[in-house]
Image 1 (cartoon, rainbow, N blue to C red):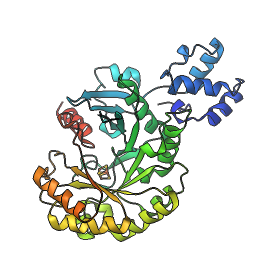
Image 2: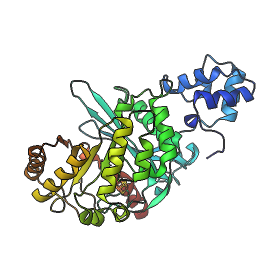
Image 3: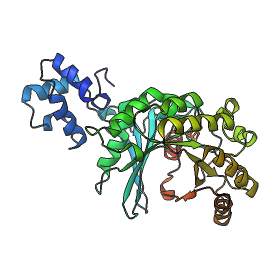
Image 4: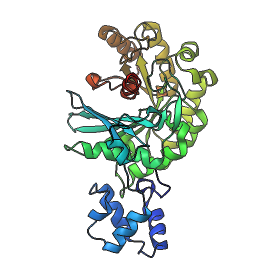
Length: 367
Ligand code: SF4
């Protein structure tokens, strides 16, 4: 890693200021960023509308390296998953000694295609390396937190998934990969600005979702972000007793406090909040849980997304039966709640959060 400013961390203003200081006209910043985001070119040598001296200056002064893709998998349903290492240099990554890398510097991201009336290509990205929350059912929380990603590293995941997939550009972004996005608030909000900016990835705020287990003060702050993103609260249990068993951080935040923060977010942003609920067989998927969940959703006037659990060895949770999932949904709908079951994608490539990194880590320690 170098201490030079990284291209994915810069904006037209910050890059313009830097290059003006090196004697280049500031307007060249727009040209450089156009190469990066519109032409998907990160080698200054290929930026052919710049003079040779300017191209050299950019190479010398800025960091254009990309996270090293250690694993890339394609599922039968078109879902793609990448394991990225943020510490390996290109030389190390190609050397047989280091090719496995170190899981303490790796994150995952996934591209999920959906061929609806308007085809979608959703990037599910990580905001941290590992996760401190430690949800009992999640592979990402197994090893704790190893660090925050920078805004540039967050942006780069969307960029990389867009270039890996030759069919089309990324249309939607969800912060549902590794990490708690609101625990890395400054970098995540900076990344959202670049993902949304017309000079950046140009993805509408309405197509960007931040999913959080719930930090009430940060949820309120997010309401002040000028970009109208979607906030998803990962509830996963309809009462505090069960939630605290599943999500250690819930010991310090009640569902009532989350509902209050969600309401404040709605009042500030005008955007409806979504409740995410992972159904764990025999744990939180019973009819009484659906009824309790309906009461929480009513208070927040939110819709509910149900997600069937993807099993992760060695965790002791199982995927619920389809009939039970449909009954759970019907109970919510009968109570007047708008409720969807999210389609399971990429099961054949371990697409659950943290699963690929965990499996890669197991292979590394067995070698
Ligand atoms: S589910 Fe999300 S918040 Fe919970 S441990 Fe996994 S990555 Fe962290």
